Image (cartoon, rainbow, N blue to C red; front, top):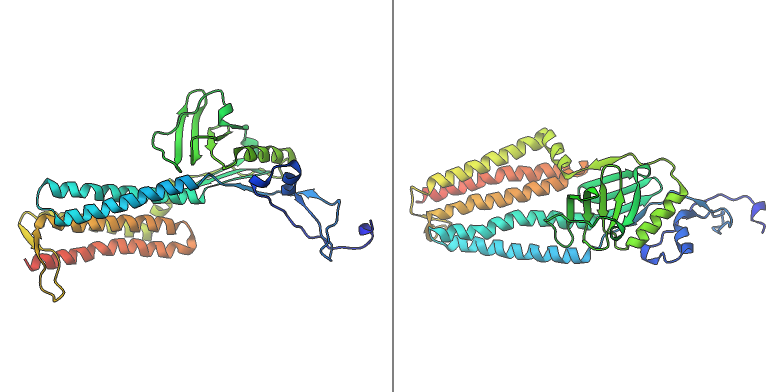
Length: 352
């Protein structure tokens, strides 16, 4: 071959193969090789060398996303039905019972929405320098020197026990397991888990192809590490501390909370003095039908729902500096909306 006699300018081309396609050792080796190309774009054989490639594995998402989307749709329907029943109910237990599905929907929908977002963005990354686990706002970076072992959960001497609050697509949290100590679950299922042992705790994850994950990890550690990752743990609570440390965010959230409480107190004090009120107006501007005064509580309830939506939307936007202005705008709307509902209550009381 005459390739060694002519000058060339090297280029790097990294070939990546999906885990499910890596059925042979020859195919897997392509993950760790770069091929130098000459100026004509032809490969220069024999100059293959290892590179620090990141291998990204994903959890099983389909079942969890379908389940969580179905439950969110069901909660939304129940919440709307509860809101409609509350608007039609008379004074008594029926009105309070109609608020129950609305309250459940207001609590459950944000939780499920975050869990669905976390599942969609979850990744398990292995490289020569360590392992990076991401699940929503939870991030764990483990230096390769801190990884004691990586095994299927079925091969452990102690049987795993799972967090009690779990569903398809969300097996999360730290749980004490007899014989193993603390086990943190960042998984979408309870079957075919892979456990990563470290000095502090064990991480239980659910890559779609567990065998490929373990095999690729073994291949990478055989290559050695250039510079191990810096140990790093990020929890969702850290985002809340960042938000509270921001003066504009703190003032907007406090203002929204205080005004929402004031709205609830005003509506509660106005109810005993009236039996019925005109809740709304006709198209011609005349007062609407008379309804029980207790239905004034619908306004604080609606405000609380919108305030929760603005709060979680702001948290989502606040994560990146480029979108923090939009987060302040969302929290500002959460502070302005109680004022609008107060104006509505004022006019309702004025027309008797």
